Image 1 (cartoon, rainbow, N blue to C red):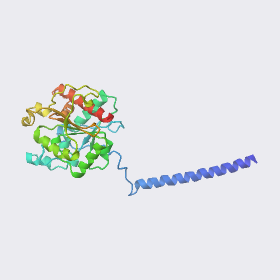
Image 2: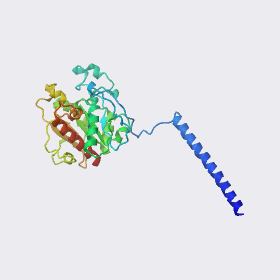
Image 3: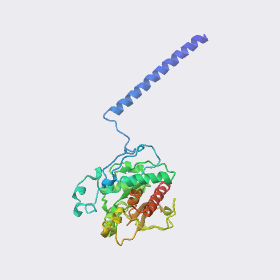
Image 4: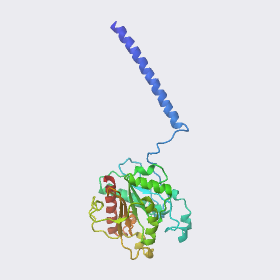
Amino acid sequence: MLCSRAVGYWRQRSAGIVLIGCVLAAICAAAVIGLEGPRASADPTLPKPFRVYRSLESYDDIEVPPDYEEQTEFIFARLMYPSHPYGLFSRSRGYAEIADRDWRQGGMSWTQDYPRADRNFALAMRRLTRVHTRSAEQPVNPDDEFDIFNYPFIAAGEMGDWKLSGEQISRVREYLLRGGFLMLDDFWGKAEWDRFMETMREVVPDRPVVEIENSDAIFHMVYNLDERYQIMGQWAMRGGMADRWVGTVPGWRAIYDDKGHLIVAITYNNDVGDSWEYADDPVYPERYSALGIRLGVNDVIYALTH
């Protein structure tokens, strides 16, 4: 009796296993069909795949690091943006070839220093902090509805040239209100500042731009940076565009949210991007890279902890 009951039990058990197997097989088949069918689409909230764009500077055309796909806890993100019609590399200044490019494909102002500066800074993050940092940067297009929200820290340069549209302005504002952090760099003189503020006033119309106090935490996250000095670009070292920088005074400015958290760090009349880009160039003054890298490290750690 015991044997027959056992046989009956295992027959029922086996039938159940077969049934479960058939159901699982059907689910898997449906999943495969779903992935291959016309309705299949990736989760739009996930980060976009790594992308490489044309740089404004031919010098910055460098090889992609072999471990660029490594899964890490921090990725240096660079903001993509349309150029201002009267910006530094505009048609009105004799740069018609650059001005006619599609900013979404690179080769315009947002790619100044990219990607060499980004990858040099990522290497510095790996050496100077315990933050597990990807070796390659991630360009972020504000037109991609969700992608910007995957990055707690986003940098941008040549800020006298940015000109965001209405939808892009709304998305960057939402990014900051959700707790994002912008590091904005490399613009000089009143004309470039005024062009920068055309967009910045629309992004955060109710928050003023102020000078950062020496006591602010952002100057003391990893490095104490009470002693700061103007960071010159490589172009200035060669005597270029003297009308752009001669007589300028470096500015360390910011925008804070309602809780007093710094959400936009602005290095005005400075070229932090060049201090990263040329950090491995023996001709470029080491003191500029020393300060520029420390500023960047402090900004990232602040963004990740506040």
